[in-house]
Image (cartoon, rainbow, N blue to C red; front, side, top):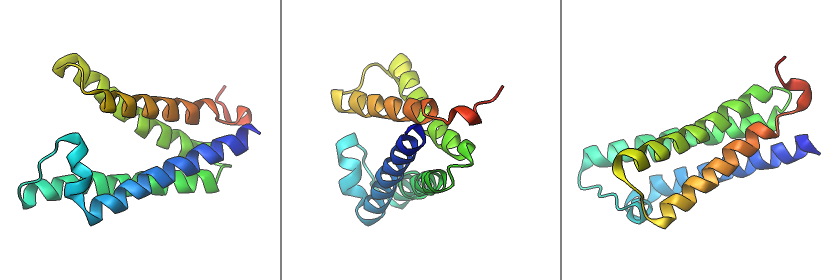
Length: 129
């Protein structure tokens, strides 16, 4: 049961990152608008696509392999840590920049739940020690 649930969480994470990556490559201005990003020139678009297309596509690939090759739980662990890294960045931003709008807080909570779920659902036989 635990293994199947972790595979589902990993597959959902893969799908979310894949959809964001594809949508960001097709219409970056539309995808950037909810975050108040302005992409006024080629440099800004290049940086945006590096993260939201390239890096997020890499996230999706990690999650696909983690769900598919669940006998290697470290793949899922890496994916979970990548997502939790985003949460760390959000918390740092709250400390130095102040509270963002509620939508951004919601995204951070979803990331926190997803990252923790991935790590918490690690198969017991694969736990170190």
